[in-house]
Amino acid sequence: MKQAKKLVGITDTTLRDAHQSLLATRMKLEDMLPIAEKMDMVGFHSMEVWGGATFDSCMRFLNEDPWERLRKLRKVIKNTKLQMLLRGQNLVGYRHYSDDVLERFINKAIGNGIDILRIFDALNDVRNMEKAMKVAKTEGGHVQATISYTISPFHNLDYYLQLAQTLKDIGADSLCIKDMAGIITPTMAYDLVKGLKEKVHLPVQLHCHYTSGMASMSYLKAIEAGADVVDCAVSSLANATSQPASETMVAALENTPWQTGLDLEQLSKIAEYFKKVRAKYNNFDVADGTVDANVLRYQIPGGMISNFISQLQQANALDKLPQVLEEVPRVRADFGYPPLVTPSSQIIGSQAVLNVLAGERYKMVTNEVKNYMKGLYGEPPAQINEEVRKKIIGDEKPITVRPADLLAPQMADAKKEINFYAESEEDVLSYILFPQVAKVFLEERLSGKSNVDFALVNKEKDSDVHPV
Ligand code: CO
Image (cartoon, rainbow, N blue to C red; front, top):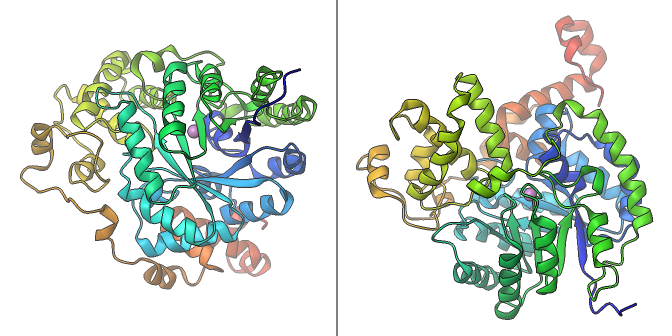
């Protein structure tokens, strides 16, 4: 057997991205806790358990406190580093938040158990990441700065290397290549990782979705080029729109100079467990188990295509799907080639649908598109088509500063507003991020806690009293 030159790390995404991608982010804490200790013993580089859409989903669909989820996982997962996905100045929401909110949010995320913060911006606008990176660093977190990977006539190796160097200059501890659409080819993965290792000199982690079927090949090439960590999910929640399976990577790398040091026996027990869990969420399960070749043709994430199908169905125009798929790259070009990831994927996607349904481009536009054109999401990678901008916002001058510079502090007012229901600063943050959803959640929690009284005074409250 060859001696391992280097151990390649695996970040397990089962408790965050895997169920976000396959089960509409619906996995409950009660299905995570019984297996968490076993997962902790595997020896993963880290476990991604928080952030992304899980925060919203906890309160909106599961009647769970996202902060409580983090604390409970931290309590059981004693050895493995816990990781979260943070949308830069958008935190775990869909718009920019003021710096005082960002500071408190990151302080609390780390305080409740997060070790590694993977920070990205949908436009790769470093100004939208910088504050989060600085605060995470000050609070003692590991800052994993992210390159959102996309393909366009504008994006090339030099662009990514330059972006990575900037991220290093402002304090990145490691780099993540985030391939949310699953479109990075094995060759590009090799070249990009090699370039980053040689020129930027930081640990490199690769995050791919399996959607197009290329991800495990890309992982292998990236590892050959020196990648330090790859993101995987346990096999029963892997592949399709999720990450490649851990077991596959462990076995493929055995007897090579890049072993993982992980044990297939242990992983198979965890896979067995999640197989049963997955069956419980059958109603939300989106995977059809096949490779989505459309992703390769149109270079857009699989999730966007399923959104198009439901939007077009509602408009009774499913036959327009091919036109919409053709329109996406044109809208992207007009918009300065943003990577397609939350929230830009939603902004571009809805606009492509509107352009096709209206029969005239940009005749109807969403508010988000207006804000995008005003610069309120930041600066896109390439030039915006000025003719299109003019059609959308007229002569209004777009902003040139960092969008959050225009936001007044929000913490103090929010504290006053939600004072009656909030039991902690964490609750106030939940409220700022998702005002309506959090208010209902916190109200119900309060009524649940004083169960008896509420039941006596307010009969109709009975139905939505939830045990805490
Ligand atoms: Co992902």
